[in-house]
Image 1 (cartoon, one colour):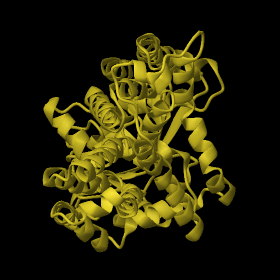
Image 2: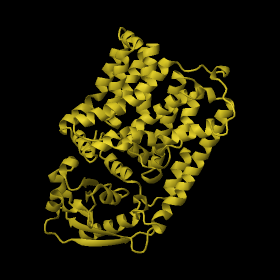
Image 3: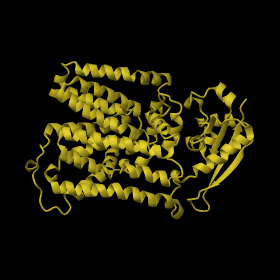
Image 4: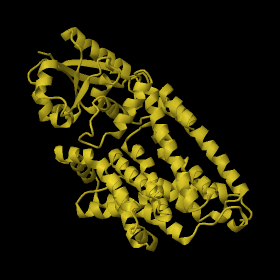
Amino acid sequence: MALLWTLVPALIHTAPPLDVVESAVWGREWVIGTYKHPAMPAWALEVGRAFSGGAIGWPAYAVAQAFNLATLGLTFALARDVANWRVATAAVLSLLGVEYFSWRSVEFNHTLAQMPFWVAAAWCAWRAVNERGSAWWLALGAMAALGLYAKLSNATLLLVIAGWILMTPRGRASLTTAGPYLGALAFAVLCVPLARWLMATGYQPLEYANARGRDQSTLATLLFPVNAVLQGAPIFLVLGLGLFAGAKTAVAASTQSSVASTPEQRQFLLALTVGPPLLSIVLALAGGSGLRAAWLAPSLPLFAIWLATHVEARLTDRGLQRLSTIGLALAVLLPLGYAVVVPSLNRWTAAPLLRVNWPQAAIARELSQAWTAATNRPLKIVAGSAWVAGLVALDHPDRPSILTDGVRAYAPWITPERLDREGALLVWIEGRSHGAMPAFKALVGDRPVETLRIAFPRGKPTDVAVIRYVVLPPR
């Protein structure tokens, strides 16, 4: 599965997905975070690029699959501990049809980056409370901190874990040992750079999250649970087809070699599955913001485990064999279907142009040549939207920084002195609003605006990207 989801997009994409482009060009800055999120995905992509000799394409997809495999492995480990290996196997197999483990896994972003740490924190919390070993509390502190470096919304899970510890007898009893305090200390130490960055930037990511949330209506927030059901539909479908469709009889789990899960274990799973989304709804409504469906993704592995514990009686050898067949089919057919649909979608349908079908190499080549012809200097800064500026900067040998929308607060590593000394290539797509943003217009000034037209080889003959650009010469 991981191999196919690495090779297929590497072979058929003519441009990486937006989040990959954005994080890849941020990765070269090695900052704690950006105006959107902490920068863990950017670090991971930069490490992948370094190990691949400078390429951005296939290593980005390999990094995404590495995080996904880690999530699935940790899901198995958690499910085996709170239930048994049969539940663990069923939970992992049922996740293979979920979008974040299939076609959306090609776009490595903060949602995918946070998932292994989300599941790992849940696993460490269970083990820490039940085994009371200081090592597990230290691991919990580390996973909790690293999860925040992936995405700040991991805080909702940490609050729910804290609530579960305080509300359960075994959890409260663990507070009489040194472990929880060692874990809290590890968490605090690891979070110091993150906290300092947040304060230094005026909590920009929180403002960004609020702005994104305000795009959603109150109704969308209230329908958040409905979105959860829709996103979890593949889990229901895989378990239903594997364990119920065509099954004549169900064998009690007690006849198997595994031990059935207990109510306490299922309550733990339920609390950590529904707690973070419910807490997010409360916080969103209280803050006059909203929620996006993608923010549910980290809860799906725990939901798969919880659901699998309710069908333990059908997790016979035959039932698991059927699930394995379905899982193998999904792992092969979904990437192959992706390989067929994506390259042809824009050519034969009226669907919006997919970003992965943009001619990234042609755009980067033409605009880079325009810069060289005008300045004969290295290209160190590209200003514009994260998309078109990123397409130019992504594989450029000079490894330029991007100045998103021309707003210096979005890229504090680009100082006015650096901009004056190195100049910049200003790029925007005709008709897009960011080209009229005050900060961007101030950079353009009264300089001559040039036009580049690039056809989409995978689109219709009328599909053409009209890109405007201005050369801001270096001093």
